[in-house]
Image (cartoon, rainbow, N blue to C red; front, side):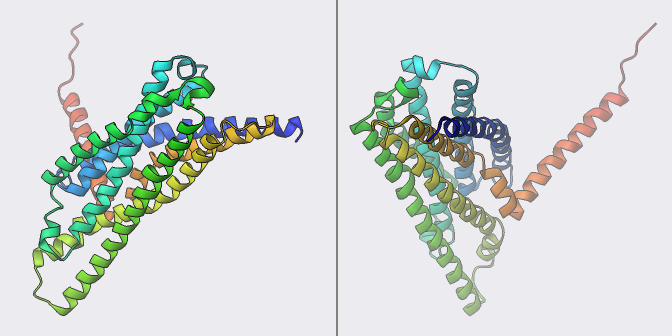
Length: 328
């Protein structure tokens, strides 16, 4: 392969990485902030599924602000912390691995919560409570912190702060594929299908028995059903994006120690950066998916914007009513 093709591919890789980070970091960060505001609103703050969405948004914001900005500084502004500071490399790798793992499982918890909330059995619906969600969130965070400790031990700044070549690169690839992709995505899909089945059963039950609990029916048709729609849409996009990201990373880490031509190395860097685009896309999408998928989410967001606008008008009006008098 001639050198011009290599140069063009390297240039395309650089542009892809630069443009994607400059777009996804601010767009995703604003989206996460809006999510946090919405999921802490009075309409949703006591809902267990909304709490899992809130936790996911907080984690996504951390990844975008810490991981995204540090990646941007390293690749496009000449920062050498990742490649030369061993402790920084290890801490960053550990935090990115732990936060990313925990975020994936909070999406799974939201899927489980919707499955329980749509069940016709009271004992299963009792699982969907905010106090239970708080406890499960704490346990999930602790487990995520513990099972990600290997990344702190075995990541090294050589070659740009990646897993040590050899056995650990294989282990880390398996960890990415199994623990952060196949396992949670399969469970998310399973609970999503189960949720669909619960909804179908509830509709059949309603048609056969008109004396069903009216309050529960109304709850299912409003907030709960909207959260189900948000969760299912998020799960679908998360699975598609996650599979692409993990495939790119697995190939890159598994082949790091294999001798390659100069052009093949450039191709591998392109694949790795393509995976990075999907990494940050995955943490930037939720607000926009919720907005497109849910009338409730759009309504709450609109109310928040309107309240802010009215408060701003009152503040400006107050300033006009009490102007500062200057004595000449």
